Length: 296
Image 1 (cartoon, rainbow, N blue to C red):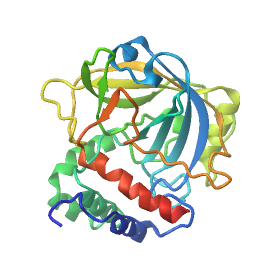
Image 2: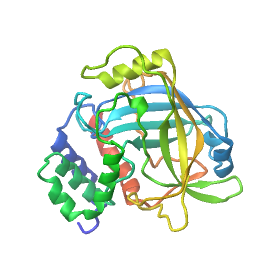
Image 3: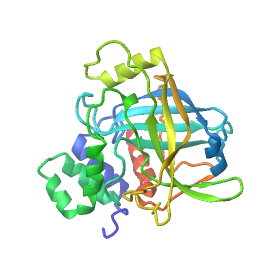
Image 4: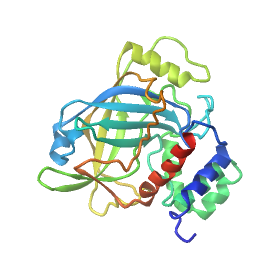
Protein backbone atom coordinates (compact mmCIF):
# COMPACT_ATOMS: atom_id res chain seq x y z
CA UNK A 1 0.00 0.00 0.00
CA UNK A 2 1.17 3.49 -0.71
CA UNK A 3 0.37 4.70 2.80
CA UNK A 4 2.44 2.83 5.37
CA UNK A 5 -0.22 3.45 8.02
CA UNK A 6 -3.16 1.95 6.11
CA UNK A 7 -1.86 -1.60 6.48
CA UNK A 8 -4.60 -3.89 7.77
CA UNK A 9 -4.25 -4.31 11.58
CA UNK A 10 -5.02 -8.03 11.33
CA UNK A 11 -2.15 -8.41 8.88
CA UNK A 12 0.11 -6.30 11.10
CA UNK A 13 -0.49 -8.56 14.10
CA UNK A 14 0.01 -11.63 11.87
CA UNK A 15 3.44 -10.34 10.86
CA UNK A 16 4.50 -9.74 14.46
CA UNK A 17 3.22 -13.21 15.38
CA UNK A 18 5.33 -14.50 12.50
CA UNK A 19 8.43 -13.23 14.32
CA UNK A 20 7.60 -14.21 17.91
CA UNK A 21 4.94 -16.88 17.49
CA UNK A 22 1.36 -16.70 18.67
CA UNK A 23 0.94 -17.26 22.41
CA UNK A 24 -2.60 -17.64 23.71
CA UNK A 25 -3.51 -15.07 26.34
CA UNK A 26 -0.45 -12.88 25.75
CA UNK A 27 -0.05 -9.44 24.23
CA UNK A 28 1.36 -9.32 20.69
CA UNK A 29 4.31 -7.27 22.00
CA UNK A 30 5.40 -6.75 25.62
CA UNK A 31 4.05 -10.23 26.31
CA UNK A 32 5.95 -10.70 29.57
CA UNK A 33 5.07 -8.24 32.30
CA UNK A 34 3.34 -7.73 35.63
CA UNK A 35 1.05 -5.19 37.27
CA UNK A 36 1.78 -2.91 40.20
CA UNK A 37 -0.23 -0.33 42.16
CA UNK A 38 0.68 3.18 43.23
CA UNK A 39 -0.18 6.86 43.13
CA UNK A 40 0.76 9.95 41.14
CA UNK A 41 0.98 13.48 42.54
CA UNK A 42 1.43 16.40 40.13
CA UNK A 43 3.42 19.58 40.73
CA UNK A 44 1.93 23.12 40.65
CA UNK A 45 3.73 23.80 37.38
CA UNK A 46 1.93 20.91 35.69
CA UNK A 47 -1.41 22.13 37.05
CA UNK A 48 -0.75 25.62 35.69
CA UNK A 49 -0.14 24.27 32.18
CA UNK A 50 -2.89 21.64 31.99
CA UNK A 51 -6.41 21.37 33.41
CA UNK A 52 -6.53 17.54 33.25
CA UNK A 53 -7.85 16.09 36.50
CA UNK A 54 -4.80 13.99 37.38
CA UNK A 55 -2.52 17.04 37.08
CA UNK A 56 -4.18 19.23 39.72
CA UNK A 57 -1.99 18.15 42.65
CA UNK A 58 -4.15 15.64 44.51
CA UNK A 59 -2.79 12.06 44.62
CA UNK A 60 -4.51 9.81 42.06
CA UNK A 61 -4.26 6.01 41.83
CA UNK A 62 -2.17 4.52 39.04
CA UNK A 63 -1.90 1.08 37.51
CA UNK A 64 1.64 0.30 36.37
CA UNK A 65 2.91 -2.53 34.18
CA UNK A 66 6.63 -3.17 33.76
CA UNK A 67 7.40 -5.44 30.83
CA UNK A 68 9.86 -6.77 28.29
CA UNK A 69 9.31 -5.70 24.70
CA UNK A 70 9.32 -9.04 22.90
CA UNK A 71 6.20 -10.88 21.81
CA UNK A 72 7.20 -13.98 23.75
CA UNK A 73 8.23 -14.68 27.36
CA UNK A 74 12.02 -14.75 27.05
CA UNK A 75 14.26 -15.07 30.12
CA UNK A 76 14.97 -11.63 31.55
CA UNK A 77 18.66 -11.88 30.74
CA UNK A 78 17.87 -11.63 27.02
CA UNK A 79 18.61 -8.09 25.73
CA UNK A 80 15.37 -6.27 24.96
CA UNK A 81 13.57 -2.96 25.09
CA UNK A 82 11.78 -2.62 28.45
CA UNK A 83 8.46 -0.92 29.02
CA UNK A 84 6.67 0.99 31.77
CA UNK A 85 2.97 1.62 31.09
CA UNK A 86 0.92 3.81 33.43
CA UNK A 87 -2.83 4.28 33.66
CA UNK A 88 -3.90 7.31 35.68
CA UNK A 89 -7.29 6.59 37.31
CA UNK A 90 -9.20 9.84 37.83
CA UNK A 91 -11.79 10.38 40.54
CA UNK A 92 -14.62 10.82 38.00
CA UNK A 93 -14.08 7.29 36.70
CA UNK A 94 -12.13 8.26 33.58
CA UNK A 95 -8.54 7.29 32.86
CA UNK A 96 -5.62 8.34 30.70
CA UNK A 97 -2.57 6.27 29.79
CA UNK A 98 1.11 6.77 29.01
CA UNK A 99 3.25 4.01 27.52
CA UNK A 100 6.99 4.43 28.08
CA UNK A 101 9.85 2.45 26.61
CA UNK A 102 13.59 2.51 27.21
CA UNK A 103 14.26 3.76 23.68
CA UNK A 104 14.35 7.60 23.68
CA UNK A 105 12.44 7.99 20.43
CA UNK A 106 10.76 5.98 17.72
CA UNK A 107 12.94 4.99 14.76
CA UNK A 108 10.32 5.18 11.98
CA UNK A 109 7.24 7.16 10.99
CA UNK A 110 4.85 4.51 9.66
CA UNK A 111 3.38 1.21 10.80
CA UNK A 112 4.72 -0.58 7.72
CA UNK A 113 8.26 0.58 8.45
CA UNK A 114 7.90 -0.53 12.08
CA UNK A 115 6.80 -4.00 10.99
CA UNK A 116 9.77 -4.23 8.66
CA UNK A 117 12.06 -3.26 11.54
CA UNK A 118 10.59 -5.93 13.83
CA UNK A 119 11.12 -8.53 11.12
CA UNK A 120 14.65 -7.32 10.38
CA UNK A 121 15.70 -7.20 14.04
CA UNK A 122 14.83 -10.88 14.39
CA UNK A 123 17.37 -11.76 11.70
CA UNK A 124 20.68 -9.89 12.21
CA UNK A 125 21.61 -10.20 8.56
CA UNK A 126 18.42 -8.33 7.59
CA UNK A 127 19.07 -5.28 9.76
CA UNK A 128 21.78 -3.69 7.54
CA UNK A 129 19.45 -4.05 4.56
CA UNK A 130 16.63 -2.38 6.49
CA UNK A 131 18.89 0.51 7.49
CA UNK A 132 20.07 0.92 3.91
CA UNK A 133 16.44 1.37 2.86
CA UNK A 134 15.55 3.48 5.90
CA UNK A 135 18.56 5.67 6.73
CA UNK A 136 16.33 7.96 8.79
CA UNK A 137 16.12 5.22 11.43
CA UNK A 138 19.85 5.34 12.15
CA UNK A 139 19.90 8.39 14.49
CA UNK A 140 17.16 6.87 16.66
CA UNK A 141 18.99 3.55 16.90
CA UNK A 142 22.20 5.38 17.80
CA UNK A 143 20.33 7.29 20.52
CA UNK A 144 18.94 3.98 21.80
CA UNK A 145 22.42 2.49 21.92
CA UNK A 146 23.72 5.48 23.90
CA UNK A 147 20.81 5.16 26.33
CA UNK A 148 21.43 1.40 26.62
CA UNK A 149 17.79 0.98 25.68
CA UNK A 150 18.22 -2.59 24.47
CA UNK A 151 19.92 -4.51 27.22
CA UNK A 152 19.39 -6.40 30.43
CA UNK A 153 19.14 -3.86 33.28
CA UNK A 154 19.67 -4.75 36.91
CA UNK A 155 16.15 -3.52 37.69
CA UNK A 156 13.07 -2.13 35.99
CA UNK A 157 13.36 0.62 38.63
CA UNK A 158 16.76 1.89 37.54
CA UNK A 159 16.19 2.90 33.92
CA UNK A 160 14.38 5.80 32.26
CA UNK A 161 11.33 5.31 30.07
CA UNK A 162 10.14 7.52 27.21
CA UNK A 163 6.54 7.83 26.01
CA UNK A 164 7.46 8.67 22.44
CA UNK A 165 4.37 10.61 21.39
CA UNK A 166 3.62 14.29 21.89
CA UNK A 167 0.35 15.57 23.36
CA UNK A 168 -1.33 18.95 23.54
CA UNK A 169 -1.86 20.29 27.06
CA UNK A 170 -4.65 22.84 27.52
CA UNK A 171 -4.71 25.06 30.61
CA UNK A 172 -7.75 26.23 32.54
CA UNK A 173 -7.48 29.52 30.61
CA UNK A 174 -7.31 27.75 27.25
CA UNK A 175 -3.58 28.18 26.59
CA UNK A 176 -2.12 25.33 24.53
CA UNK A 177 1.29 23.66 24.90
CA UNK A 178 2.73 20.66 23.06
CA UNK A 179 4.59 18.33 25.42
CA UNK A 180 6.51 15.08 25.60
CA UNK A 181 7.17 12.98 28.68
CA UNK A 182 9.96 11.05 30.37
CA UNK A 183 9.84 8.75 33.42
CA UNK A 184 13.09 9.29 35.34
CA UNK A 185 13.94 6.98 38.27
CA UNK A 186 14.56 8.44 41.70
CA UNK A 187 17.30 6.87 43.79
CA UNK A 188 16.33 3.84 45.83
CA UNK A 189 18.38 1.25 47.69
CA UNK A 190 18.76 -2.13 46.07
CA UNK A 191 17.21 -5.06 47.92
CA UNK A 192 19.36 -7.75 49.48
CA UNK A 193 19.90 -10.95 47.57
CA UNK A 194 20.84 -12.10 44.10
CA UNK A 195 18.40 -12.19 41.23
CA UNK A 196 19.64 -14.43 38.45
CA UNK A 197 16.69 -16.56 37.43
CA UNK A 198 14.49 -16.55 34.35
CA UNK A 199 12.19 -13.97 35.95
CA UNK A 200 14.84 -11.99 37.81
CA UNK A 201 13.44 -8.54 36.94
CA UNK A 202 10.08 -9.34 38.49
CA UNK A 203 11.73 -11.00 41.49
CA UNK A 204 13.97 -7.98 42.04
CA UNK A 205 11.17 -5.43 41.82
CA UNK A 206 8.96 -7.43 44.20
CA UNK A 207 11.83 -7.63 46.71
CA UNK A 208 12.50 -3.90 46.30
CA UNK A 209 8.85 -3.01 46.90
CA UNK A 210 8.83 -5.13 50.03
CA UNK A 211 11.44 -2.72 51.45
CA UNK A 212 10.30 0.67 50.09
CA UNK A 213 8.23 2.31 47.33
CA UNK A 214 9.73 2.83 43.89
CA UNK A 215 9.54 6.46 42.80
CA UNK A 216 9.78 8.03 39.37
CA UNK A 217 9.68 11.68 38.36
CA UNK A 218 7.28 12.41 35.54
CA UNK A 219 9.28 14.91 33.51
CA UNK A 220 7.73 17.05 30.80
CA UNK A 221 9.38 18.74 27.82
CA UNK A 222 7.63 21.66 26.13
CA UNK A 223 7.95 22.03 22.37
CA UNK A 224 10.15 24.85 21.19
CA UNK A 225 9.77 26.93 18.02
CA UNK A 226 9.89 24.63 15.02
CA UNK A 227 9.57 21.40 17.01
CA UNK A 228 7.25 18.89 15.33
CA UNK A 229 4.73 17.22 17.68
CA UNK A 230 3.38 15.00 14.90
CA UNK A 231 6.63 13.14 14.08
CA UNK A 232 7.69 10.44 16.59
CA UNK A 233 11.26 10.51 15.20
CA UNK A 234 11.76 14.24 15.72
CA UNK A 235 14.25 15.58 18.28
CA UNK A 236 13.39 18.41 20.69
CA UNK A 237 16.18 20.31 22.46
CA UNK A 238 14.22 22.04 25.23
CA UNK A 239 14.74 21.21 28.90
CA UNK A 240 12.50 18.88 30.90
CA UNK A 241 10.75 20.03 34.09
CA UNK A 242 9.34 18.13 37.08
CA UNK A 243 5.61 17.51 36.54
CA UNK A 244 5.06 15.14 39.44
CA UNK A 245 6.01 11.93 41.25
CA UNK A 246 4.91 8.40 40.42
CA UNK A 247 5.11 6.24 43.55
CA UNK A 248 4.76 2.50 43.01
CA UNK A 249 3.93 0.80 46.28
CA UNK A 250 3.05 -2.87 45.76
CA UNK A 251 2.54 -5.69 43.27
CA UNK A 252 -0.97 -5.94 41.85
CA UNK A 253 -1.08 -9.61 40.77
CA UNK A 254 -4.88 -9.86 40.51
CA UNK A 255 -5.28 -7.02 38.01
CA UNK A 256 -6.02 -9.29 35.02
CA UNK A 257 -7.55 -12.19 36.90
CA UNK A 258 -11.18 -13.23 36.57
CA UNK A 259 -11.38 -12.48 32.86
CA UNK A 260 -10.42 -8.80 33.06
CA UNK A 261 -8.29 -7.53 30.18
CA UNK A 262 -6.33 -4.33 30.78
CA UNK A 263 -5.35 -2.32 27.72
CA UNK A 264 -2.93 0.58 28.04
CA UNK A 265 -3.91 2.85 25.16
CA UNK A 266 -1.81 5.95 24.37
CA UNK A 267 -4.82 7.54 22.64
CA UNK A 268 -6.94 7.37 25.82
CA UNK A 269 -6.96 10.97 27.01
CA UNK A 270 -9.13 13.16 29.25
CA UNK A 271 -10.31 16.75 29.13
CA UNK A 272 -7.29 19.03 28.99
CA UNK A 273 -5.19 16.72 26.81
CA UNK A 274 -5.43 16.23 23.04
CA UNK A 275 -3.70 13.91 20.59
CA UNK A 276 -1.18 14.88 17.96
CA UNK A 277 -1.51 13.71 14.35
CA UNK A 278 1.44 11.36 14.83
CA UNK A 279 0.58 8.48 12.44
CA UNK A 280 2.11 5.82 14.72
CA UNK A 281 0.01 7.07 17.65
CA UNK A 282 -3.16 7.09 15.57
CA UNK A 283 -2.51 3.56 14.28
CA UNK A 284 -1.93 1.86 17.63
CA UNK A 285 -5.54 1.46 18.90
CA UNK A 286 -6.57 -0.59 15.85
CA UNK A 287 -3.66 -2.97 16.32
CA UNK A 288 -4.38 -3.22 20.06
CA UNK A 289 -7.99 -4.09 19.30
CA UNK A 290 -6.87 -7.02 17.16
CA UNK A 291 -4.40 -8.15 19.81
CA UNK A 292 -7.06 -8.00 22.54
CA UNK A 293 -9.48 -9.97 20.39
CA UNK A 294 -6.94 -12.75 20.02
CA UNK A 295 -6.07 -12.73 23.73
CA UNK A 296 -9.66 -13.31 24.81
